Length: 465
Image (cartoon, rainbow, N blue to C red; front, side):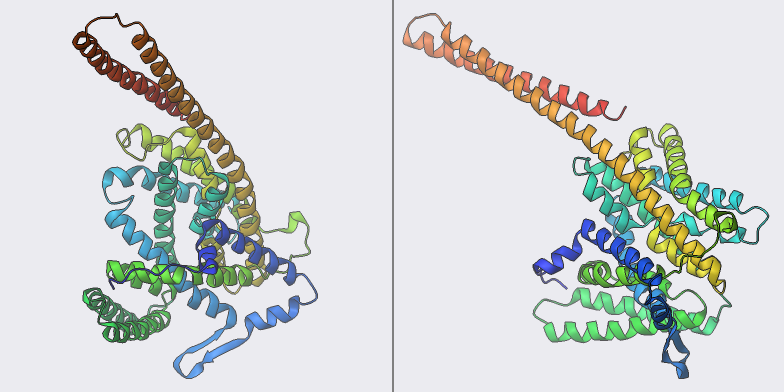
């Protein structure tokens, strides 16, 4: 589609905001936890577990599964479109740009998994290590937007690259580790549907703006094929959200960008809050601290601690080895801050918790509480770290502006003094002298301004120390 993206209404703009999306997610999770432990809790549990669907075609799902397996595929579709854009034309489109965030993301997966494995030694829960390895992009960027307004663009780009790579790892983990018995004919049906979807998207990309009728026919066909791809993926034994990932990666660029743009308010305003609410419907277990399973402690420690340590250490190693000339080079303080943001697991960690502890209701509840508490600790830690770095960058920018203003003022004063001391003489001589003086003064001003800018850049660079 070549038509211009229409202007958003105020309500839609509100839902596109990273800050508002993070706030809605947090409110939904808190509301779910509170209501689950209130007099209406039992009714909500019954509603979540109520089966709705079409048993004749194998779609007899609970309402909770319709949310986590169905609606959440929309979120993963948007993630996949963003991932493809970053790999093709964004912050990951070359090895030099991707190497440092990739290594930092790998550290942010390995160390939390290791912390969980250590915490669960001797228990039957060690194979649930993927739960604390994911980072919630929406929440992390929301915290960055709220508390980090003075941070430079390169910090946001690094976080986005790291979070996208982190989500890629999470997608692979879901596809590989949480796949039940594989139904190859159904998987083949999903593959065929995805190929047809890709071809239709390319036909859509070639349509001119004047061919409205043809466009909408293709869009309608794509929606039907996308639903078929999701259905076959669900029947194959692979988690159904992977269909959203595959469709996002297969779709042609321009239509994919428009589709993600159109779906983002739905994802931020409905899909993610609804999933957070349903996942947080947990009755707080009335057990003592000593009776909590090792899995609870593994998740609770791995998210805020494992992520910070893993991302920071791996980022420093990458900086000092393969990333010396990388445009993604960040300071130690910035890496620690991004590590704090990385500990906000939330959406994907909650999904992995449901998948990992399927059938173990009490442990699922403990895991959900651990994800919520670990993410809450990470939110607080990240808010403090981001605020401090933002103030440091803001102070450096203010100093740079002051230096530049001082340099300009000094140059102006020097120019005025030079003009007032010119000797009296013939008109031609005065004109020539003034012309020469003006040229020299102009160059002098440029030099002073350059010195001021260099001083400001030096101060900004010192923030990274």
